[in-house]
Image 1 (cartoon, rainbow, N blue to C red):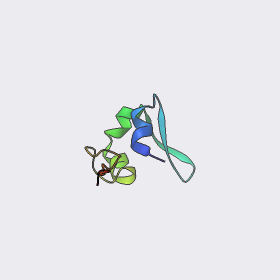
Image 2 (tube, one colour):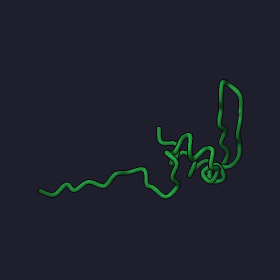
Image 3 (cartoon, rainbow, N blue to C red):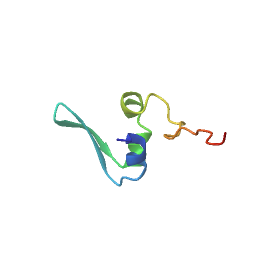
Image 4 (cartoon, helix red, strand yellow):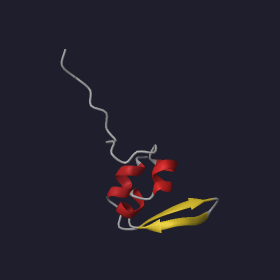
Length: 57
């Protein structure tokens, strides 16, 4: 799963912990939440989810 990509395109998102909703909001709003960033996105908000590779030899 790609949490960042999912949140970028979600109108509504929920964060569950032990079966309980602990955070909710629009995907873009949750992308700005420091708790979500730290727990699910590696602690940084300015990284892209895809790694560029050189395919030319």
